Image (cartoon, rainbow, N blue to C red; front, side, top):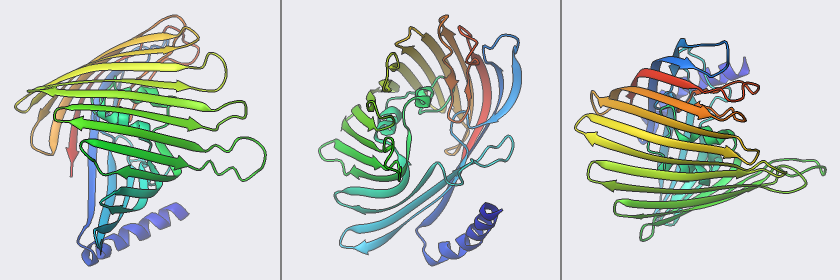
Length: 337
C-alpha cells in the first residue's frame, strides 16, 4: 500500500517538475510478442504464450540534468520495468536503474542502483543487443549485471579509451560472515568501426574465498555487416563451479530490414555443456516502431539444463530435466518513445 501511495504521489508531481525544469524527460519502450515455446521439460510440450520484453524490456523511465556551471552537471535517472502481458510492475519499483550523479569533463560519477562494469562489456559484444532469445543475458543468472548500494565511475573517452570502476556495498552490518561487497572494473577501446572491451568483478560472497567474474568482448562493423563476440566467465568459490559462455554473432542491415544470427556455447566444470543457435529478423516501420520474428534452439548434453534468454523472458528445463532442449519461436512488436 505504501508503495502505491508513493507511486501515485510521484506521478502526480512529475508534470510540475517537468515544467519547472525543461531538461527532465520521460521515456520508455513497450515490447510484446506471441511465442510458441518448449522449455525442454518432459511432459510439458509446446505452448502458446504472450509475453513482454523479447527484444527490449518494456520500461518507463525519467531522466534529467542540471547545469551547475564550470562544466559540471547534476543528473538523475530512474527506470521501472513493466510486463505488458499482465500489466504488472517489477518487484522493485525502479529496479532497472536508480541513480543520482555528477558529470564533468573527466566522466560520470553515480550513486545508487547501476549497471556493473561487466554489463557494459556484455552489452557491446552481443549482436542481439541483449534482446531476442539466444542473447548473452542467459549468463547473468551467474554473473552480476546490476549493482545495488553502489558507487560508480565511467570516464570520458580519451583517444577511444574509456574506463569503468564500481563498488557495491554488501551492507552486512554484523561481524560474522563475508561482507558481500563487490569490486569491479572494465576498460573499453573504440577505434573507428572496431571495439574491444574487458571487465573483472571480485565478490566477497562466502568466507572461504572470493567469487570472480570476467568478460571480454569485441565488435566490428564492415559496411552493412556487424560482427560481435564475447566471453563471459563466473568462477564461484568452491570446486567445480566455474561457468563459461561465449557468443559469436553477425547482423546484416538492408534498408528497413535487419537480419541476425548468433551462436552460443555454455559449459560448467562439472561437464555440463550446451550449444544454442538463434536467428532473428526485424523490420522498422518507423524510427521508433518495428516488428520482429525470432527462433532459437538449445542442445544440452545429459548433464545440462541451460536455458535461452531474451531481454526480459527466459525458458529452461527444470533442474531435474537433465538433457532437456528448449526452443522458442516469437513474433513481436516494439515501440519506443
